[in-house]
Length: 419
Ligand code: SF4
Image 1 (cartoon, rainbow, N blue to C red):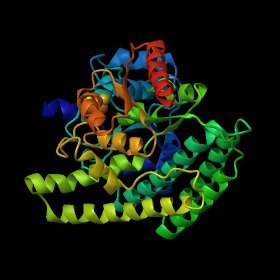
Image 2: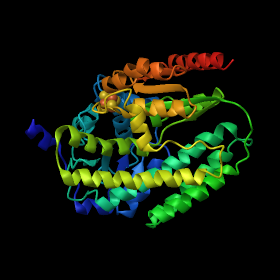
Image 3: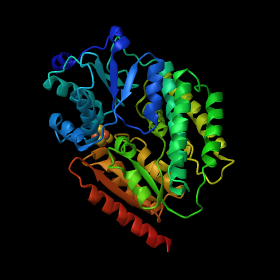
Image 4: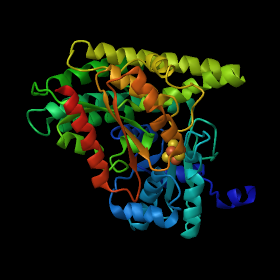
């Protein structure tokens, strides 16, 4: 096993940093643009891939066994598709994947990609990993603590913009106003990040206030829409490619939706360090660092909340600590495969915030998320009798019509309840 692993490994050297393009899959809307700037700031030329048609899936299926998780087929497919497009000098290109390093199959995406490259005769292309678990060492690609912090700031901005976009777009009077505002702020924050600005707590706080004020002035209709929450596996939850344009569909059905922030996923990851320490012991230093980090991010949550206070029409997300509290009566916090306890915690958060119709987006066959998603519905309904939760499976072979029909059924139930 180890010899195979070594055979497939191509190092990304410091030399390569100068003129290689690193291709990243498009995972989170907005956030990826900001992460790209953080990479640029640290001397890496990263390009986020946006190809999203059926040929991308077919490329994924050609090189990855269809038993593998759907997100793997999408993200690996997107990268291989780009390599085959003829757009890149294959001897000046590298690929990057994001890994949690947990026990889930996501930890194997890197090896799948390397194996696919080998089969395509492109084994010389380096495959990099962004993770906080110290996996995959490359002499020319190191995630420093400073860079990790910059990435967290980038995610915080992405979350703020996502939150306000979702609450403005369904109500906008002039179609496209919200989109324009998003682009304006993506450009503005992107410029700041690229110049090593916007990444102190003071700047974040000020930017949050300005962002909220700007979104507030978008002319919006005063109308009642069905409120829908979206939870699920991280890729299909955020990626319109992964969830067949779920957000667009919900907009077409006259819904307002809330998707919990990306940063929450990382807060849960960091919180698990504490939970693991309590259950199994481990490094005290790691524990203390994780607590400091959570405290810092908790301050950012306060800044977000504070920025939204003057505009009561906007619903602020709950502090992460509260989400943990809400998850506890539903599931043991030791359950951490896939999205783990975070998923039911977010369902409870959304219901408490008024988004009691919840879509649980999960890749077909994703056992961990079926356990923490579908598996907790009964318990959540016991605690929140009004909860209208619908798991929706996403897969290369799943029909978009079936998915949309399920969601329509959920909305029909929601409308009945409202009568
Ligand atoms: S969470 Fe689900 S989709 Fe993601 S790697 Fe694990 S099994 Fe696959």
